[in-house]
Image (cartoon, rainbow, N blue to C red; front, side):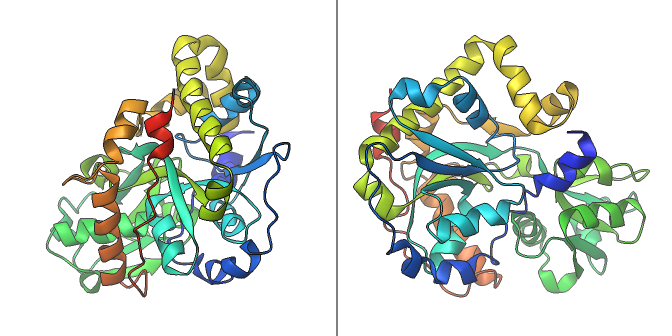
Length: 338
């Protein structure tokens, strides 16, 4: 798969609001699911994002089998499709962001976070034209992002931190690839996009990133999220899956020559491009997971981040109601991981 086809298929849309309709019906569909037997493969979804490509190593190196848990990894060209599949009970677990998980819960889904894969540290960017040198310079300008996505969330956060609001810009709702293309063509003044579309947008002469997810550590957190009912009925399987993830990270560290080709092939880009994008994603170790699941006062702590994101989504209208987050985070499995 070449780079252009990766851009079309990656669809790291990370929709915050659009999954709500499906989520509202999740209770009806999930309630019809049969308990997973010991021999029934666990269905896990994932899509194009550097922090989730390691699941392909887990699969190819048979690390699930090594842990004694049958798993079917399901690849989604469209990230939103994976969220919908989880909310509809078609998956047991899915790779998705904290933002989108909270939004789904606000819409009626019953989900739990059991693992933090990474958080974005530069791969999500607000890119502006040459003449715009500060966030304040966005006032009155045409700014595009995919409405309801995590990059829309990042845009609103950047505006707020810079003393502006959504009302201070002329917001242009465009799919991420279209936003990057429109910006590169000079049709808009700024855009909120993620890799690999960042490369396309930055082809515009003089353009630069005003702000990236690196400036907001923990604001965009990528997770393994499971249906709460599945976790309750299959804790042993969840534990083995979490163990397999950390075994995967060790395998990647110990055998880069044998695992890098797997990661690059799954990404669909060149090795150099993959390494460049990978730098904008910070994989979280086991110890970091254990720390991040604990209460804290920064966005790298998941309980604090969840509260802040929940309030922000309601404040900006990306979620209509404040969800109950009391059972969202389940640290049992990272605490017991080997």
